[in-house]
Image 1 (tube, rainbow, N blue to C red):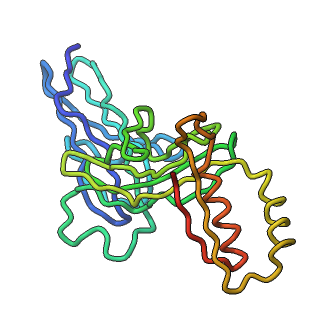
Image 2 (cartoon, helix red, strand yellow):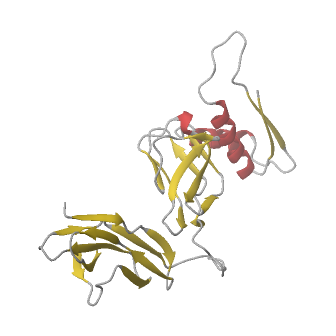
Image 3 (spheres, rainbow, N blue to C red):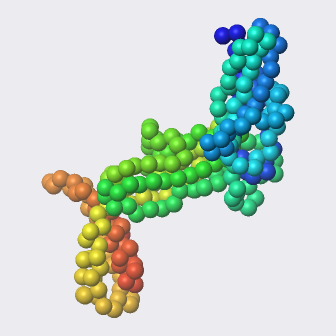
Amino acid sequence: TAIVITEQPVSVSVPLGYSFTLRCRAEGQTSLQYQWFCQYQSVCNQIPGATKQDLPITAQQTQLYTCRINDLYKNAVFSDWVKVEVHHCVARGLPPRLWQGEPVIVLNPTEQRVEVGKPLQLQCAAMGVPAPSYQWYQNGNLLERQKKKKLWISHAKVSDSGTYLCCASNSRGEHWTNAVDIHVGKSSLLPLLLSTINLFFPTVEGKIALLVGNNHYQHHPNLMAPVTDVFELSLLLEQLGFQVVSLLD
């Protein structure tokens, strides 16, 4: 209790070779001494000569850092552990030459087709100083529990289909990933559908397919997955050379 940390270091996410400074400030009843430590994988080491409040770093590899502060009475406290995430593969032209630490997307999620009951994982990454926080959205709706770089759904449902994107933000701004379409449906009937189409349409040059998926009925319960069914059939027909026109409701 004799030492109070007034400024904690903050995590950052930066490109390889980027130079920056980790800061730690504390107050005590006597003069204070600082010592920085780093941890790579499971090995923690004292950083030689790193005995000041500020620790200059040129990013080389992803590591964890903490600072120990002690006074003349042998009291000691440690700062929060912070992560310095280093991106070795950054798209050409990023970060901007005058980059001030605002989020920059370096990995966008990709479109996926997932079978019902199988795991769904989307991933993105952004640079930023401080390190960005993440928030995922589905069809424009905020997903309360999806606040990490990786969106994970252990058992995908048809209702998990939709358009996903993620917002990376920090104190300097925000940046959005590309929007991607995720399709969740049953795939067990696809081989049978493909063989049936091949049987009745061995050659399909110049053929046009009109697919209509109805979900909202006045005197009938809604169907389970007409959107997914239309999507799956569209892919099959396009593989067979059809020009496909898809309509919903």
